[in-house]
Image (cartoon, rainbow over all chains, first blue to last red; front, side, top):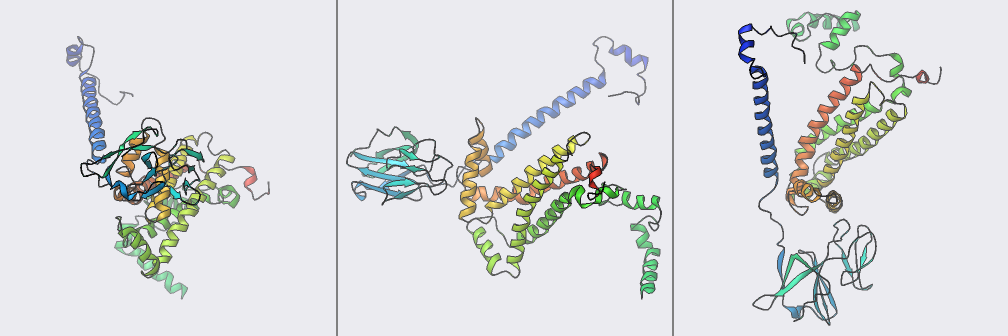
Amino acid sequence: MSDAGNPPIPPARRSAQAGDGITRRDFLNEITLGALGIAGLGSVAVTYQYFSPNVLFEPSTTFRAGNPDLYPVHSVTFLQEQQVYIVRMPEGFYAVSAVCTHLGCVTQWKADAEMIACPCHGSKFKADGTKIEGPAPRPLPHFAISLTADGELLVDKLQSIKPAQVFKL
Amino acid sequence: MATSFQSALQNLRETKIWKSIFRRGPANTNRTRSLAVFGNLFLHWLPVKVREKSLRVRASYYLGSISFLLFIVLFVTGILLMFYYHPAAPHAYRDMKDLEFVVSNGVFLRNLHRLAAHLMVFAVFWHMFHVFYRGGYKPPHEFNWVVGVILLLVTLFLSYTGYLLPWDQLAFWAVTVGTNIISAMPVVGNKIRFLLLGGNIVGENALLRFYVLHVVILPLVAFLLIGIHFWRVQKDGGLTVKPKDNDGKE
């Protein structure tokens, strides 16, 4: 703050600065701080990039669920790796997410009680994902189903659809 | 016996090596005692003089010292555990099991680390409540109170990152739930979760990131803040001492 320790500016230098009202010291300070600031922002940006992986070795979000005949009518099948239930009802197929909408635990299909239950905090859902009770704020989402050229079910987990959109063979 | 030991110590103090390390005579006056504290890296941020009142149990219940002692225990046992632990799946779970059932004294070290971690969270919280209820956050201690709150958060974050490392069901679901709580934060929540896990699921990247946070970054931050915390106690005039600290005798 205080310039008490600095020697007084010689008259010659003072007159050279009279026109623009900014001293050489202030100018260089501001230039340096500005350059450091820009470099600092750049470092934050490249560090952020570095910490965001570009390639992930995670299960694919689009997957084949096999031949439709594998799933009998009135059945709920849990696909462990993809964390999806393939539900087949008389009206058709739906793919229901097995990940609880509360805090992301993987739910389980309880065949005897005919409901999907979350082991972490006790949320309960019907086979079509509708919420029965529990802390879960939303029903389980449905994913888009299509058929591959060779007749297998293809589920796309990035594409959420309305529960009414049932996939018919 | 005692005299021969004392004369041996005296001879040692006369040696050139001793004098090159401790550049002072025996600490037998107030001045030389002060110099002994000032001239020692590990003591110089501690007060040269301490009021007798502030050493009484009621003044602090030694909660800060207990927290620090537990931190040192965790530091030492943590380093020892690192010699047998690979932060990768599926090794992490096997290494934890090896430490429990195969490695000599591994179960002792692991349990010491785990129990000291639980106790440290408890001690740090109790320390905070104690300081709060006796008004230790009031001027001139406001800055040190804030450092203490950050240290509490670092302690909790150390606990949380260490929780994932056994790579068992408890660890996996605790971190799944915890990181989903983070993603509930508006706007940046999902991004922070992605950066913390190094992906969208609790997988190998998450294990490695939590490991680096747990064994390098957070301990460094904790050591730095603990240094500032201790130093500020001295600079702010020592512990808050009240008349009732005389063990009930006013």
